[in-house]
Each structure stands twice: as C-alpha cells, then as structure tokens.
Image 1 (cartoon, one colour):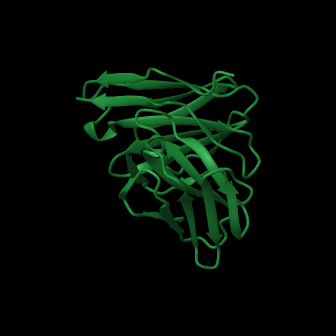
Image 2: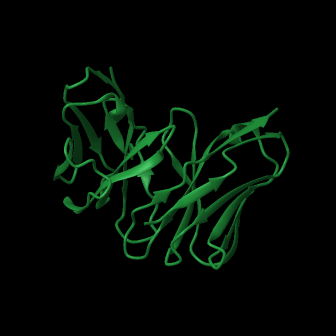
Length: 111
Length: 114
C-alpha cells in the first residue's frame, strides 16, 4: 500500500523568496511523480511531473527526484502571492494511471 | 474544451438520505477517477473506470457507496443512507488511460450531511 507524505504541512514565505516543498513515498516501484496545485475552492491542477531521476525546470518551478531515497521535491524561485495555494504531491505506478496523493502543503506567500 | 464538469457544486442532505453526484469527463478521455477530499484525510482515491468498465474500487466504502459509468460521457457516484462523516468534496478526474498522463480534475461537489 503506497504511503505518500508531505512536509511541511504549511509554510509562510515573503514575496521573492525561494520555497521548497518535500514529498516521500514508500513503494520503490513507483514510476511517475507529480505536483498539483489547488487554489481555494478550485480544482487541483497539474503543475509539473517527472518520470526519471534528476531535475526538471519549467520557468520558476523545479522538480528534483531521487528514487533511491524515495523522495522528490518542488522548488519555487521568486515566489509570488499568486503562488499561495495547497500543493499536492502524487505518485503512480507503471501500467496504471491511478494517483496516490499526499495530504498537501499549504503555502502562503506574503506581499 | 470545457474540462471535467461536476454537478451539483453543492449539496446538503439530511442524515440517512441518498446523494447522487454527477461527472462529465473530458471528451476522448478513457479513464475516469473519483476522489474524496477532506481536511483530515486529504485526497483519497475512491474508484476508477477504464472505457466505462470498473477497474478498481478499492477506496470505496463498501456498504453505502456505488459508482457507475453508463456511457462515455458521464459517471455517477451514489451514496445511500448518508452519514455526517460522508461530508467532503467529491472530485472527479479524467485522463487518457496510458500511464503518466495528466489527471484533469473537476471543481468538485461539496456534500454536507446534517
């Protein structure tokens, strides 16, 4: 049974700061790793994904994946107030598109 | 493309009543998922359809919850004899079925059982 844990539970950072969010998973056979973002009252939306060890950058956002450590992370450069949201990490296995989510990190970026 | 459409957006039911929630997936998506979101438990998987066939209902509370997908354009989640602990946001998502494809979520149906 896949267990996905996120840390921290909540985070307040000033505008312009670098933000780091963490996710650990329990099943070493996991293949696909996602970050979703959910603004209050809205649908979760896929932010970024990574499928192999290493780093992937898209604009201000970077994902790091270390499968051996069962850990991946999301880093936000130059955080903006519009980045304030619930960040959800998720993991899926090969051959099956079902995602198992962590409970989320609430990020507040103060102007 | 209107995205995943869920109705109703809000529903209040009395304890013991039945609630039916509807989902229209994105056209062309063969995989449909139902999740439940609460503050305490986060996003919990309920059930999954592939090409309208039920594939995995391992997250469904067995006695009062049921889900169907009678055609490719809609799925329903039915909760019988609702209880206060069923209060949650129920989220539907759809995707292309191959592994690694993005799940697109609807905005959810907020169910409150009083």
